[in-house]
Length: 100
Image (cartoon, rainbow, N blue to C red; front, side, top):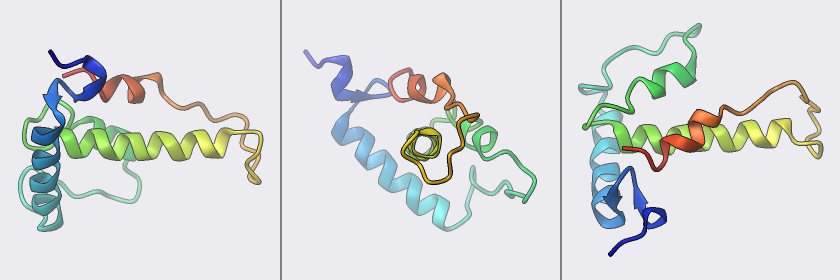
């Protein structure tokens, strides 16, 4: 039996990796469901969170939200030269990884 920690959104790692590869290719072509334009004033977290429940975009969304969350943590850390102590990574981003 596979542990929850060994899955991504309930999928076996190999299946998740195959889906990620497919979703990256689709995204790079600007094809559906990634054909929604991302405007300058759009919230990037809302943009990617909107794909979490989309079977053709969910794994790429989880990946990108994890990258965003990582960078927010880095910006918010006391070691950061930017010293942005007011920013808070969303707890929803870490939950997105394992919840289908």
